[in-house]
Every structure is written in C-alpha cells, then in structure tokens.
Image (cartoon, rainbow over all chains, first blue to last red):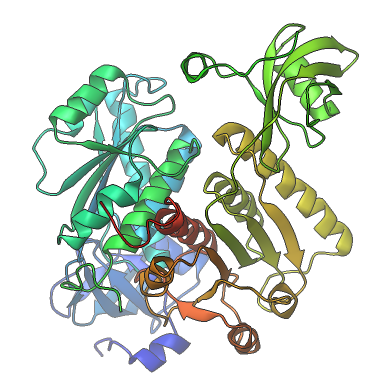
Amino acid sequence: MTARRPSSGELARHRPPRCYAPDLPGSPASLELTSAEAHHLSAVLRLGVGDEVELFDGRGGSAWARIVLTGRGRVVVETGPVRLDPPPGWTAALLQGLPKNEARDLVVRIATELGAARMVFVHAQRTVGRPSPADVERLISRWHAVAVAAAKQCGRNRLPELGWAPSVEAAVEGGWTGLSLAGEAGGPPLRDRLAPAAAGGCRAIRVALGPEGGFDPAERAALERAGFVPFRLGPHILRTETAAVAVLAALAYELDRPAGSGSAVP
Amino acid sequence: MTARRPSSGELARHRPPRCYAPDLPGSPASLELTSAEAHHLSAVLRLGVGDEVELFDGRGGSAWARIVLTGRGRVVVETGPVRLDPPPGWTAALLQGLPKNEARDLVVRIATELGAARMVFVHAQRTVGRPSPADVERLISRWHAVAVAAAKQCGRNRLPELGWAPSVEAAVEGGWTGLSLAGEAGGPPLRDRLAPAAAGGCRAIRVALGPEGGFDPAERAALERAGFVPFRLGPHILRTETAAVAVLAALAYELDRPAGSGSAVP
C-alpha cells in the first residue's frame, strides 16, 4: 500500500516523525533509510512496520512513507508521491566570521528555522584559531547534522547550503545580483538599507557579519570592493550570534511576503 | 580626582569594564560596589586603585568611575557625573510561556541585547512543571543576573523588567495602550500587523508567545478578550525561543527609528 498524504485536518491531529532522505525517489518506491535515521526511528522512537513517517530530501521535496521492513538497524519504507515546495520567495546568504564553538550550532539552527538559503562561516583575521582542512570537514558535517535536526523540527524541506571560506576575500568571490550588506557599528539602520530595496522588488540579500572583534580594515575594504554597504542593528553591541539571528529575523520579516506586494501594506 | 567621561575618540581606543551599580549616586561621590562586582573587578579582572570602570544603574543612568580603595573583597570608587540615556523610542513587552530551562537564559540575554523593555514568563496550561514560589524567586534572580551580564556586554544601561505570571489571565491584566499581538500558526504575517501600526505612530507593542505546545483554547480566548490579535512568523514551526528572538528582532527592526520618520524611508 502506497503512503497517502493526509488532509490538513488529519495533519493537525497527527504529525508523524520527519526523516531526512537525501535520495528520496521522485515516484513511489521502496527506500532504505540512512542508518542514522533507521536508528532514530527503530531504537529511539520504537516505530515498526506499518507506522508512517514524513520524508524530506533537503531540496524542497517531501513525501509520506510507511515502514515495510525493520531489523538489524535497517528501516525500509514505501514512499508516496513527492511534493515539491514552491521555490522560496526570497534568498538570504549569511557570511559570518567564525564565532566561538557554542555559538555556531545556535546560528545554524536558527538560520535553518528562519529560512536562510546559505550560511558560510568565514575565517576572518580576528577569528580565534585556524581550523585545519580536516577540522573544516568535521565542522561542516556537524553543522549539516544541526541543520537536518532543525529542518525536521520546523518542517522546512530545504536545507540551507552550508559552507566555509578561508578568508573574507574568498567568501565574496563570484558576485551577487542582489543587495550586499555588511554589519558595522557606524552604519545606517538596517531598515534604511533593506526597506527601500525590498520595496523595489529586491529579494536576494547577502549579509556579512564580523567575528568577535569585527572585520579588520583590509577585510572591510574587500567587502566594499565587492559592493557591500554598511548597516547597523540597533544601538547596542550585539554578540556575533545575536547579530546573525537578528539580521535573519529582520530579513524574514521584511522579505517573506507574497510576490508583487511591493511596499504596500493593507 | 573625579572620573571624567572620555571623548568618543578615547572611548573607541579604551573601553573600561562595565559594572552594575543599582545605587549609582546622582552626583559625583564615593560608592562601594556590590560584592559580586567587587569580586569580578579585583579577583577576576585584577583591577586596582586608579583603574577606571563604567557604572550603569539599570534605569538608563551611567557614569565613569575610578577605583580608590580595594581589599577584603571590597571595591570603592569615586563616581563621575551621571549621564541619563534618553528614553527609548519604542517599548516591547514579551509575555512568553515558560520554555525549557536552557532556552530561558538565551531569551533573557537576547531580549536584553535587542532592547526589550519587559520580559514576563508565563505559566501556561501546557507549560511542563509548575515552579513553587521559592523556585520563581530563584528563577527571577537568575534571569536578573543574565540580563545584567548581557547589559554589561552590549552597552545597554536600562535593564528589562523581568517578571513571572502564574497564568495567561494574570499576565494580561492591567491593560495596554499599544498593539497586542499573539503568535499563532494560522495568523497573518507579523509585518501585516506591525508595519501599519508603526506607520501610524504606534511604538508600544506587547507580544504573547505560547510555550512548547502552544496556548490552549481558554488561554487563546483570554488573549482575544484582552485585545491580542494573532500573527505568525514565517512558514515554519519555530521553537519558542526562536520565536521570541525573531519577534524581538523584527520589532527592533521596524520600531527603532527616529521619532516622526513614520513610514518614510529615505
């Protein structure tokens, strides 16, 4: 029996566990879940044959599925038809000086919940320590796990792209067709930058935030050359993770609206 | 010698430690710091006679001061003239269903950094556990310490008022002359509620956010009777602490602008 997507009334009463299935097949099929998901479903949630789960592929696709086989740490499901979420109406990319350990997971988690498209941690001059290539690989895989966990919980089917740049110069390579903003204590309020751009139809924003201690003058010059304009968030000195969360929340607030609604407010 | 407030050029080069001094005298005088601050300055930061500190009273007052006596866990300073920050241009009060332990400190810290005026945790029907009166006293004193630490770091001289309400009904007693908003998955986007009110000059907003699991129907009815209108934050299911942080960031973004600037954006 193919799993059926329930009606919204059923959904409200019964929301099955969400599983990350990067290889979600495009049409109904059998699928063996990854070992991490299989472990979570069988050993932690104690689900078995016949139970339903919701799969998402991290690229906007999701499908309901029913468990048809479990055992020896394996879980096989029969998937239902895939539904593809419409593309998001706005794009936010955050380039952030690598903060302290405990702040990183918080930023990745909240960036996922608030709908960021891309989250790049940057080794800035004032970043404390320099991760080795092996560290970077380990960090990115950790952030990926944090984003997957947040996406499961918040219902988002698209994972943010997670990256690492060895310098500010490397992080801003490649250009950007939207608005580029750099956090700076002396800049104008974010609203003065963002509201006119949004009213003019701009829906793609990248934001650079310094590490603890801020960007150094050479980095600020590189940002300026790449088209970044300064802004500030309120009168106080925000921790770098607070700044990240606050700017993403402000972007979501300003940009997450139906296309064509422009600056009009009913 | 009375401590002198340095010029802004000096400030940029040299920012002394900030100390919370709730009894900051209105004109230059000797002041013994609280034992917690004395310990921090002498044992942790190893400051001594002649060193400068910045005092703030949590009600918008601040003054530079110079240490004139230390010893036996005591620190006495000579304070300079008090400067009173202008009253904030907007007021946000957050009423939040008491979240899990680890989320509470995060919310208090970020609420302080983002300029919230008031933060009340509410015992909602779906709050897990019920703190005793002694627990509540202990919790409020802990949140106060978190707010003081955040205010030291971010440079804010006004502490948010921190409170506890045993029920939603108790939390909304007493009325409110500004906008009252209640987070609800089915509501219109926050911007549709807030932007027109802000454009019309409203600068006082209170926001109710449910605990994990949300407000129950009786609580939602009580909020409605008290004039709360529903809103939602984006398409995803935010954790309660993410919702708190995101809504405060959005309020700061929308409301923190010069008086009289209305809806105009240069």
